[in-house]
Image (cartoon, rainbow, N blue to C red; front, top):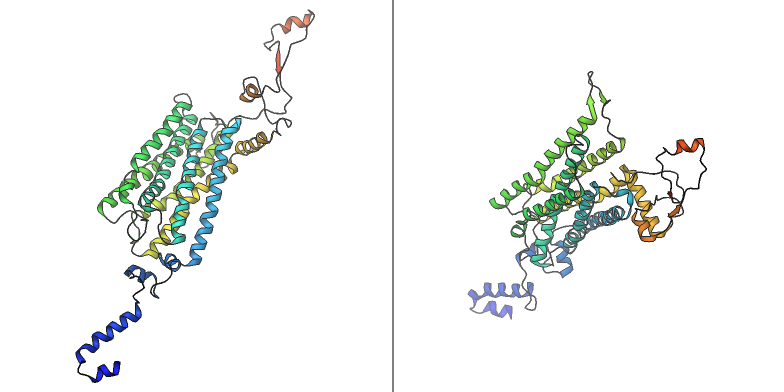
Length: 414
């Protein structure tokens, strides 16, 4: 039929007929039209939905597997560790101190980031596209901006508390009520300051939740203000206060050698606490610095492979801070390790026999369980010469005894 059409006088219609035949052969009528972006993601033409989702961000399967393993391991460590921090501080009597209100607030922020942000980011890269809609995209990016801002201002509050506790112990004291107000102010301020994220982020028609701030003057101005207010200014204040504290604890001698102070020596436990928080602040600031910097200088999101790899890298680096905090607590603080042992023993009812607790009539355990308390009156004495001197003794005539203990450890965590 094709040769017959060539022999006849229908020469002008040959080229359109060939183009029509080639078009029908390449794209059958039963197939749906493929968008230009899908053709770029799938160079072999229309493919299955699974191949399309894997190649949407142009990431290789081994890269997705490596990112899943790393983020999954950090997620498990963060959820378990920060939950343990909250449980130990709530259950253990050793950890009841003002500073631990700030520690619990940071642990809650890390748990919020672990539960409500990181799994969805990993889901986005695993399936190669965003499937949860525009509202969830805005909410998850909002949490990703909220939690580091809350934590850096809580770290600043801890810094102020440590500064006045060590350098000016009589002029100012952060009580529990003041600590609660400082924590509440940190959450409210950062919740309001991160609210423009709902305007800048969203899911577009390509089922893609934005990685970075938009390339516009509004996004650039907000990125600069966000970097200054929520990272640079608090970081400078934290460095300034800790520099004063370290200078107070250690002074520079005449020969340029660093020596301990000989007057007003700071207790060893407070020095260890300062070392722990110095390490904690260093890890936090170094972990979240790439996140704030990349929001200003980031690759174009049209280059999906490069932008995806950059976003995966900064997510992994920043999220490692959440997983490292419980490890730092357990390494640098012996009371936290004892608190973990007491917490698990308390749940199993094993520590009552091992003399791990000092229970008095004013303790919560004694009031709740009414165990271990015995009032023994003092035996009657005959009046002798020695008993006259005993009358001036200030010891109580009646002693409230519990089971014997070997030591009376401190009841604070920091």
